[in-house]
Length: 318
Image (cartoon, rainbow, N blue to C red; front, side, top):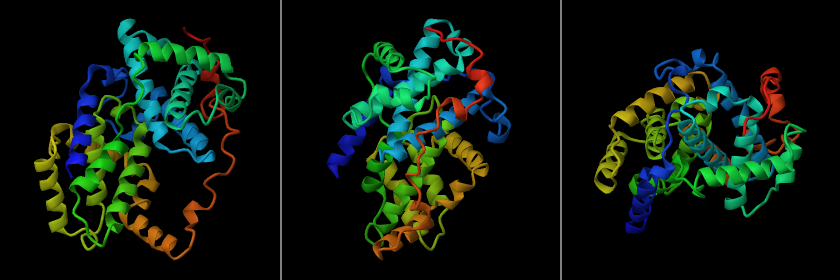
């Protein structure tokens, strides 16, 4: 128990370091209380959604941990935050889509390079882009990003916090089945919301807590009883520095609920769903949702999943 608490404390300290903080560089272009459906008119959301789709297809194709995509977005957002601050908020507004695509693809390459011991190369990413950028472009951007980020490219993620919080604070029932299903449901929500710009400046610990609480709330009380829910809240308050009823957590939960209203998969991949699929796997049955996970996604370039006229309108901005 103390090891988990120590690990959580280190992650919280790392999260609060100035080097790992991210500002909301998009600012007023996406109102905090606007609905996700209304936000779709914005280029920023369109860019993030298309690139999130591309990144997840890349890692799924190579059976690479999806947490690398979250790390890539965190580092990308920190990179843009610093660059915007240096240029008095001028970089992001004037950067071309191709420049943003190169930066985010490079962030994914860097995460995989560090966390997966270089499973993919710069040449691989150049091939994925289908001519949008070269291996040399990725290498140059990597050096630029490492310099801007002071070589700090392993930020704590919402998934990392979830994997520590649940074994520490969630009371076990039915062995580990419910805890495992809750981890998967919370992880799924964390993966989905990387595309929403409204979460850019939010703490990963708060995002993790919000995802867990929303996943619990969407679960039938017969699966996670009231006593179990109350015990989890008590443990969070007594064993950690996190506050489940903080303003930030409440705001994230509300935004997460709005986001999920526009994504049918959010409700489908619930705790109940993962419990049933776990039971099927234990019986040797492969659930339908796992059948075509690695279907040739890497032939799709960032250009093809964004508006090509936007991507070619400007040249690279150094």
